[in-house]
Amino acid sequence: MIQQFADWLIYSVLNFDPASKLGSSINFFVYDTVKIYLLILVIIGVIAFIRTFLPPHKIKELFSRQRFGMGNLSASILGAVTPFCSCSSIPVFVGLLKAEMPLGIAFSFIITSPLVNEVIFVLMGGTFGWKIATIYALFGIALGVIAGMIIGRMKLDKEILLKFDDATGEKLSLEYLPKSIEGKIQYSLQEGVATFKKLWLVIAIGVGIGAVIHGYVPAEFFEQYLNINSLLAVPIATLVGIPIYAGCSTLVPVVFALVGQGIPLGTALAFMMSIAGLSLPEAIMLKKVMTAKLLALFFGVVAVGIILIGYLFNFLLVT
Image (cartoon, rainbow, N blue to C red; front, side, top):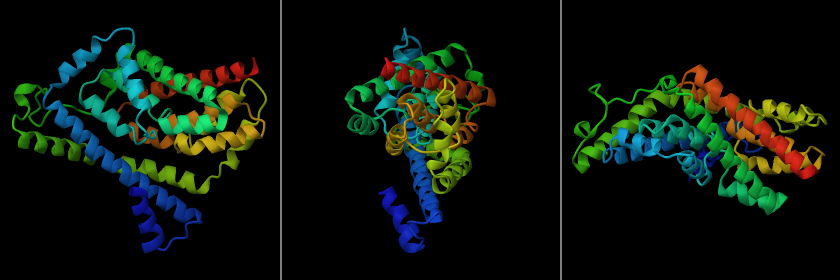
């Protein structure tokens, strides 16, 4: 419905040419902005409503007791079954933080969510075979688990910039949460609107950058940087993918085209995963949520993981 609204507004009402770069960019901007705005209002509101029945510190205690990365695994699987791009997963990530989910577990979700979902699995299965699709999905979930555990062990909760206290400045607990259903609904709506007010501008800026890249930077522009037959090809592919903004589902055909030109599958997948999981618009949005130190750590750990997955794919297919 959001895509239909964007198409109607841009192509029917404003009469932009669907084949033009400007029309494509504006359509992308309207669709993604509206989608993310609605996700913030709905998801933050739903999580806030659930939170009124269970104080955040109880949620934190529950997940903190899960040993051997089981909490991270649960969050990564949740990310794998939610069809969000990197920017669309940010509202859920913020909601998990507001519920005082342990930091590493929340990161496991936001790492896996844009990289693995059922659409990507089916597209990769139909394009490269189900064995490749299964290995990719397992590697994506494993990346979320391991990277989340690494970040969680560093005790960087103070690097989160959002404040999660209620309007009185008191730490949320059952005595401060509304008791009636009407009060819970009102509280949930207020939480969604308050979070929206904090993030709406930076989201618009981030999606705007992504829209320009989407409309004006063709995929062919990057192919010359990937066709390198050396050990540096995978890291270069990962770095080249960061400025671009797109979802994995739309990138599988691009990966297929790159492989058809002789680029190793692991190198092409590293390029795809970098675009989906480490986009520049995502970084701009997350800068409102966390410090530059934590953001750099997040990008660094995930980039290393993507590079390792690229090498593993190249090694497995060669051997």
